[in-house]
Image (cartoon, rainbow, N blue to C red; front, top):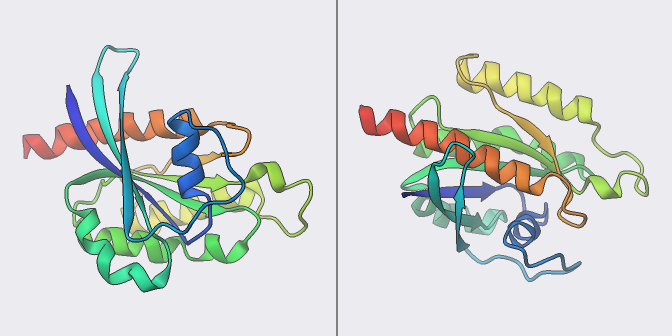
Length: 187
């Protein structure tokens, strides 16, 4: 069984903890306390091809005051969910900063990242939300800027509240992380 450390990154209050709780089967709460530093859980899963994986899922604090602490949490990671809140455009604008932070701590070009637009259940009730097109457009820009089009960044929209596509996000991250893990072990 592979044991892999994966990260959930993004600005504060984008729903990282809610996504993690939903994936772990703990449901949804409308309010959470701010993550201080990092928090992690472990989940075992088996992919359709029979590959068994233990994911160490690290929920990393997004507030600026924790930036100096985050570098230690990147060590040993083999993939990340990069989360923004579709109701707050500034969280999408900050995604390149987050990817730059990942690249600072992981010099390997093909470090797997999945871009997540979270809180899609709120699109109907809040005006000025980030569209699916805007998320897809940023994905293409990030691939070109950070990966020189050698590596694809999957894009998924989720709702931690309803559970929509949360499982897909983690399963896709697990698959991409397995490939990354195998490549780095061959080097």
